[in-house]
Amino acid sequence: MSSSATIKGLRVLLLEDDPILRKSLADMLDELGGRVIGPFSGNQEVLCHLAICTETVDVGILDVLLGQETCRSTASEFDQRSWPFILISGMPAPEELNEWADRPHLNKPFGILGLEKALQRALGMLSDS
Figure 1 (cartoon, rainbow, N blue to C red):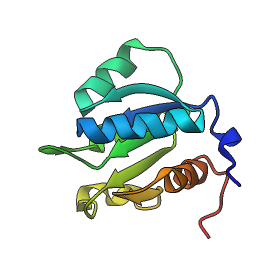
Figure 2: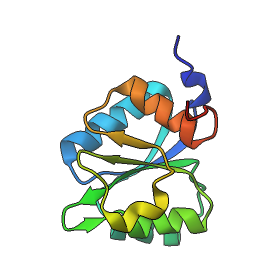
Figure 3: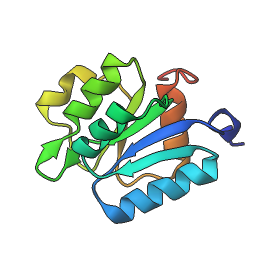
Figure 4: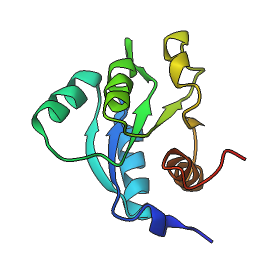
């Protein structure tokens, strides 16, 4: 049985550079009842949005590799604001992201149930077991 009621209404910032995956993730979040902020394709977009927007983010989904950059600057901003986030990637995370090795990490491809569990883990609703 799904516990997506715990996700319902959450404001989820989505950072993913691949347009097909961005759409797929947004659809999954919509199905879980989350409210997508963005989606964004790069750090600069996220940081500009956060600089002018007063809306609080409940959780972020951050693609590790964004073309020639990583999600490091967005992850740092989330840390400064004490916002939880999930790292997603089809490849191992680069060493520069090791400080967030304790964050939930989803390997692509993943489905809606994996996403839901990672969101719950990021929000402290599930243990790591």
